[in-house]
Amino acid sequence: MSIWERIHNRFRPASNQHDPEFLSLAAEVQRQLGYTFKDLHLLQKALTHASFSAMRDLPYSYERLEFLGDAVLQLTVTEHLFKTHPHLNEGTLTKYRTILVNGSYLADCAESMRMEEWIRMTRSAKAPRNRENDSIMADVVEAVIGALYLDGGLEVAQDWILREIVARKPDYADDLQNFNFKGQLAERCQRLRLGNPDYEITHTEGPDHDRWYTVQVIISGKPAGFGEGHSKKEASQRASEDTLNNWDLLFPDKPA
Image (tube, rainbow, N blue to C red):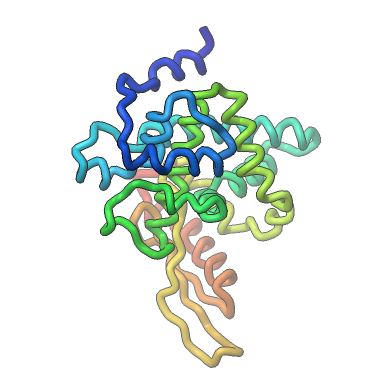
């Protein structure tokens, strides 16, 4: 038995009870996903936020499936890049992978698929798209991948990832020129399992045609570097550079 088959069996749920409210939504969700589940409970778990579980006293949420889906996503994208770019070194391949699996991009994919309409969470947990909401949507994408893997196997999950994640960004190689400090910071945070860096505009000044932005990086809820510039992009790059330059002071327990 392969390691993926052992993981498959370990993560398979013991209970297959369905919420009637979920059953009314399941057909549309599966149509949007382009896959019909044999075990709908897996899909139900993948779309259930911890706030909803706590309110309904449910023994599950999407968090374990998210953990599994992240591994499947990383493997799939890594293998795809390895095969499609045979002449690139590991450093460039790593940057390409970061572009394709970072939380902000996964949230964009979720938004394109209207996943926010499917997620089962309390009203207080729902909010217009913001940093926390983006994180939830990215987590749900990974949880859905985990559910697809358990229900249909690795090939089904990989086909979905290539179609819904990789194919949605055919110009990912063009993003490499913008990778620089922001990309390096995202790569480091992912490698150290700190989540994805968030960028908050803390101050703006000047007329519309000559704006000046101040941006702060937030990592795992902790304020990090600052940057300024004539655009949000420029300020974000400088804030990322500031964070990288002061990493040992900001995160002494997470050596680079």
